[in-house]
Image (cartoon, rainbow, N blue to C red; front, side, top):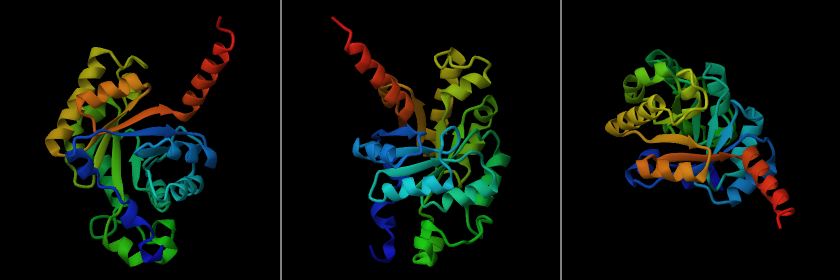
Length: 258
């Protein structure tokens, strides 16, 4: 493995992904279990969404998930919030990207940048962790940012401030949360409502103009294909618990069909 600590082999370039104009499909994992991670990896997704907001993952189990995916796919870890402590501890897992939920203002992005970036760009403190091979590649890690900062826009305020959020140089990519966005409009779950659809399209257009990758969550493969046709770069398809439940129900129901 040497001193590269697998970073060169597995480092992803979100901008390169976007310029290829090929959608990259991932899936959302909430169940903190090594088998779940390995099954999703074996399924062949381009990237995995390790969920520390609504899911069971903390920084310890997220680090295990990243280790299990050391040769790919890319690991995106969603934090429970964007406090400086959460940002620091989850970045130290060695993930490829952190996802910050419900970012709504430029001021919040500026605070995220201070916590996520080392001086002189930010104020991230230096510590020994898995991200830099437990110190084996510390200087290399400090010299070259090998992780991406992804912000979620999923509120009406976030849409209103989207241009300033997207254009900030600390933001590597944007992820739209259509379900929380519908809730912010006061119509939770109605992601096909005209105002939600328009807001999603607006943020995607702003990302395209700024040259930043734009992602979105799709509950079904059909919706994922629709988003891919619209030009989204990163698409998270389904949730592990729902996939397991639906497949189990379909299997059980098939046993009684005549």
